Image 1: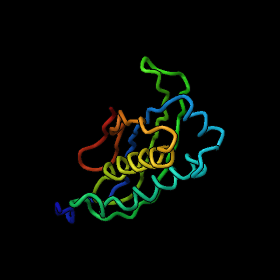
Image 2: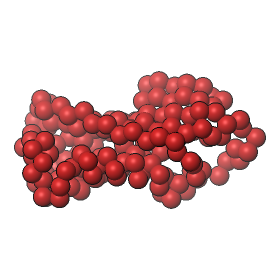
Image 3: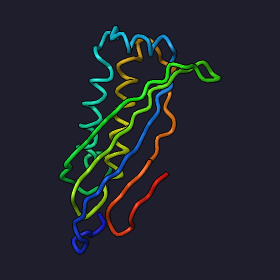
Amino acid sequence: MVDVSAKTSTERVATAQAKVLLQPETLEKIQQRTIAKGDVLAVAQVAGVMGAKKTPDLIPMCHPMLLTSVDISFQEDPRPDRTGACSITITATVKTTGQTGVEMEALTAASVAALTIYDMCKSVDRGMSFTEVWLLSKSGGKSGAYTR
């Protein structure tokens, strides 16, 4: 791992997103809470928080962090795109005060939430896919702010 001991502790915030593409019928089942495994978005929200907290266990060179906030939100778009797929956009915002940033935690949170949606809905839609997994913004630290 990179030595961050000389860095000053500052407030760090990172926001990432992931988009799940799925069939309109699948989105409807999610909205009606008729997926057999339960409330998909509630479970995905918890999974995203857990993913952020477990990032150093998954990404070998990540520092263990004391996260002060993890917020996972969902934006459903029921309008089919040119391929006939609808979408759920996951936005994960992670905060801490520390010597290194939380970009990886935000990206992991969004990704784990997307994977959870897939897991919970795969019995009705194995063709789901993920796109637009990226960092939207970060602030704090020596390198300053970044906005996509």
